[in-house]
Structure formats: structure tokens, C-alpha cells
Image (tube, rainbow, N blue to C red; front, side, top):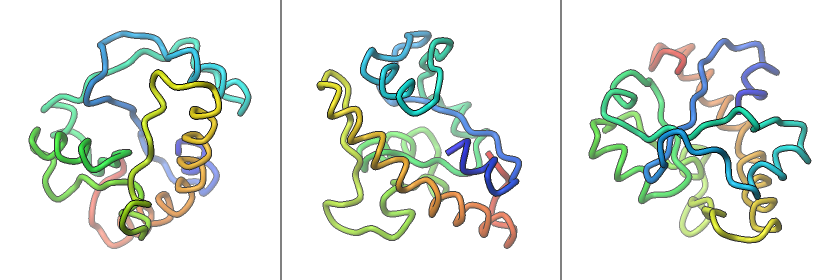
Length: 138
């Protein structure tokens, strides 16, 4: 989504954090390879666990799945945490993005494609929220 924000010329700090991340772990092989296929370099990426402090300091939190939203809300993210699919208007079983961790390369490609598809409408909504004064830009 960082590229989507850059594309629309909106200054936003985009971070990645995981509800089950091992602090400092490098990207999985599947994530690394699919990122390279799409012009992204994850060689310097290191995992960051989602913490109460990170939740407190972030204006909008988008999660891949409902269970991730639950964890972010437990850490104080009520009212600013959204499942990505719901955030862009999807409903039912179509709101969660499957976690590819441990899967084969095709599962990583599918997950990347899902997130890529949802990026533009999510960024448009965040930009609109900012224009209405409903959040800063994290």
C-alpha cells in the first residue's frame, strides 16, 4: 500500500506488524520471492510484533483477518482497527485475506494479489478520511 499512497501523492507512514510475528525475523522465502517478482525488495525487512505502543501511535490499522482485528483491539485499537476486506466494502467470507505463511509459492502469489487489489480502494478511503479529519496519516 505504500506504493498506492505514493501514487496519489499522499504522505503516509505505512508500517507492517504481526500479531504472531517473531521480532526481527526476516521475510519468509515465499514472501521474499513473490515480492521480488513484483519489484519489491524484502531483503532488509524484519518482522515487528504488534504492540500496545504501536497501536497507540497509529491512526488507522488494517488487518488481514478478523482474528487480527480482535488482537489489535485487545491492545487498544478499538475504533481505528479494520479488516482490510471490510474496510473496502467486502462482506461475508470475502473479507479475510488468507495467511500464506508455510504455504507454497502459489499461495503467496494469491495473497499478494488479494492485497494488491484491495490497496487502491483502501488508500482512497484513508485519504478521504484524512480530508474529513478522521485520522492522521499512519
